[in-house]
Amino acid sequence: MTTISKLCTLLFETTKEYDHNLHRLLDLIDRCPENSLVVAGEVCLTGYDYENFEAALDFAEVALPKLTEASKNKTVILTLLQRDGDGAKNFAYVLYDGAILRRQAKAKLFKFGDEHRYFDAGEETDIMIFEVAGVKLGILICFELRFKKLWMQLEGADIIAAPSWWGKIRERNYLTLTNALAVMNECYVVCSDNRNEECNAQSGIVSPFGIDERNGKRDILLKKFDKNEIKKMRRYMDIGIGE
Image 1 (tube, helix red, strand yellow):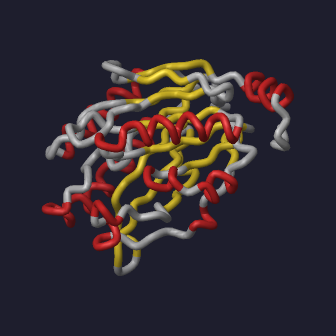
Image 2 (cartoon, helix red, strand yellow):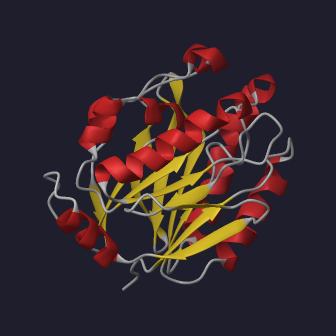
């Protein structure tokens, strides 16, 4: 059975060529070892391409089967823009061992980026802990990182994935929030941004002790996932988070 023994965060540029972006992502996923949790940047296949909005929504149906196939022996988390009823949402997908395990719509839309004009918000109550191969996971999508109430909903998670399209001018905020989230929830935080000019490009992995490593120039950052590190931190600094 597929487990999670490695953490991989990705960092690459999203172009206007959706097929190119997909092939790039598939290559990076393929380069990650088996039993990895792989987190890609928010909307990394299309960006927020409002000028070609219908095409961006259509592309989810093209990409999803290929990405699901690529998740065999791995766990892959990313977000896709997709139609939902009469509207559209930004969905985080959890692809596990060749199947779709979970879909979670972004609940907090970023008004400075006009997201509220194009998308419907998901339900905050859907932001919850779920399990993959005995590992407790949670997801916060980009702007959701700013809401402390949502941090509390994920208290007890072993890993929080944070796919993001985060503005470069707020880079310090991103670093502070992702580091603090790991410290406050005493868990691993795997955050992935994009290498586009407008983005902060600070993909990285933060340990339960608050030690962070960022991708820098690397397309893939790989770290060992050690559940004992979570147990040690929660015993050492007991703030009421159960194992």
